[in-house]
Length: 416
Image (cartoon, rainbow, N blue to C red; front, top):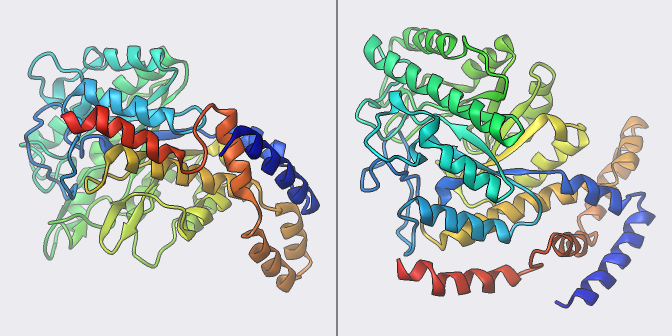
């Protein structure tokens, strides 16, 4: 589509939205401020750089073997840069602790900022900020429990690792001029019937207390729940109720991954509840299909309702939006871009909603009118505004990114 055609359709959309009481240009200003935390592990199937040939553990699986996955730090960065060039706006990059620039064998209780300084330098050069995640899985001491383990030595190992991870995040925030989110997720659980549930949760609480004893000025701390993991189906120590209670008690963020709840639960409905009791929240936008939470994000009802709830609650400045999926069955950069753009589209659609009129209808008990307007809003020309947003950010509009990724595959990833 030519630029002039995009601009013409955009102007028509502006007029149409104005009839519904929506200021499109204000929506675009808000959209420009929304920054996604892009997950580096989509590029290499959560392999990391400690042992690229090692096996995933801790209830994590990356399915598929599409050719061209990133094999080292240079290729991960190259793929991220390509993905970012096709995602409008300014965004962050989220790293796991296994993605350090390791010059020698460094166990996880010995990692430090030296192992991530080159990432900070790269982020500065690419005008990005960084977020960080401690990594409890895929390690000889992972087992079925880490921070909740009965063995104090194993608990202490993972406590030290997580304290060091928070310190790394602090330095990232300090050097890059904005707080870094540090997300703590551990896979801890059991495959079958468990009788000492309280013990493991008490161990986890004690470990978290030690981890968070030191405050860091440049870190936003978050704890992430999960329903279950593969091989750990019967009991999860860090359940939603556990981490929700811990986050509220200690004034830190709870991370909500869209695939970490029961199939009939919708994450969007939890947002307003948590925002009443915690200063901010962290999101992992993903797409659950049956038991697997890590399919590529698409513009489905769940993602749209998630964005609507955040926008309608005026909470954009209190919600940190991250992505978390790893699909190895299709082109990995393509998966990266599809999911990122789908998430952005959901937020744009929410910002273009006639919320003032909808609130008026609801306050007046005009529920027929409310439902009718919600339905009519679905057919509004939001895609014309999306294409213009891409144009504003010097990013290819519409489906043009498909050809760009095909070119990259032919020139780069197919030769790996």
